[in-house]
Length: 224
Image (cartoon, rainbow, N blue to C red):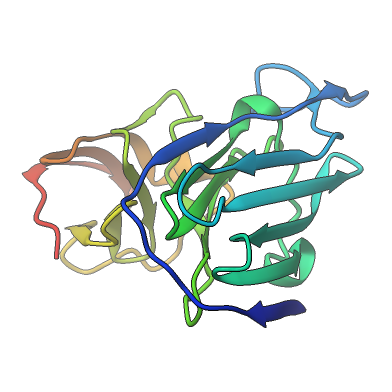
C-alpha cells in the first residue's frame, strides 16, 4: 500500500452529512449487477462545510477507481491512496452504485458496489492525525435492492457476524449468522448466503441460506 501523509493540527467540529454523486459516460460492455452500463470516467470531488473544509477527490481509469485524495484544509491530514494497492479486488462501480458521505470534520465514508459481481465495499477515510483508514470488502449496501440499511448506518459481514456501524459515532452492533459460523462464503456472490436484509437503528431482519436451510433473524440491535 502506498499512502503519503502530511500531518497538521487536528480540529474536531460538530458533525454534518454531505452526500455526493459523480459524472459518468457510457461504457461499451454489459454489466450484471448495475441497471445500466454507465462508466464513471470523470473525477468526483466532494467538499464538506465543517471547519477546515474537508474534501475527497476520486479519480477513475478504465471505469475503475484509480486514486483517492482526501484532506482537511491544513487542519488534519493530507493523504493520497493508490486504490488497487489498498483493495486488490477488480472493482467497476458506476454512478448508481457509488456514494461518498463526509461526516463533519471526522472522516469520509465511500460506499460502492462492483457492477460485475454486485459485491459491496466500504472505505472510511480519517481527516485527523492518528486516524485509521479502514476498508470493508464484504459490505451490505443499499445499492442492492434486496438490502435496506437506514441512513447513518453501514453494514458488512464475515463468517460469523453481520456488523452494523453508526457512521457518526463509530459504535457497532452485531448479529450472529449461525451458532457455529459459516465455513465457506463466496463473497463475490452475497446472495448465496444473504437473501435479504432490513436494518434500522433499532432492529435487524436478515434472511439467510446456510447449508440448504433458511435462517431468519429479527432482533433488536445494541450498539457498543
